[in-house]
Image 1: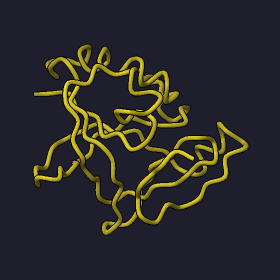
Image 2: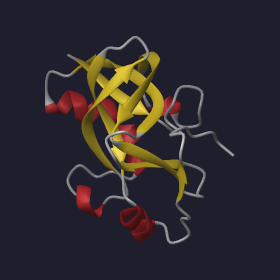
Image 3: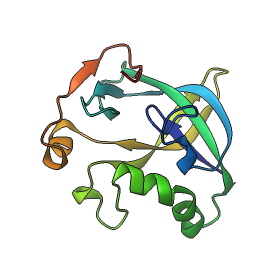
Image 4: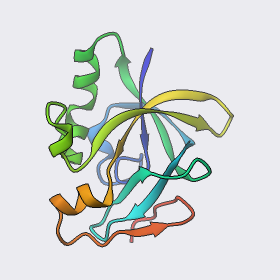
Length: 142
């Protein structure tokens, strides 16, 4: 099974943090049941939303196979650091990496990891955050 990440912000191919992942393929995709926010900090945040809400981004396939927890940890190590995610302390991290279903432009439904947060959790870590809903579910760096 391939290791995948749904990226909707700075980890997308062509953006500032993309180099943190060993991406072998990228394609447009969406995740349902989430909404997207501009944090006012130079990056977005996805949070749980309503079933009809969508976040648009890229489904990234990473080098390696998901054959063990150590394979997954190695594939995400630099991205986890970038996102401030500590797998040993998800509640104390500003973002959490969870597995959801992404739908590609071609209609394929694939399990993928994604970094999510909440307004309360983000503000606990970044007092200057100004969370603004991006109604279209698309982030464009400012």
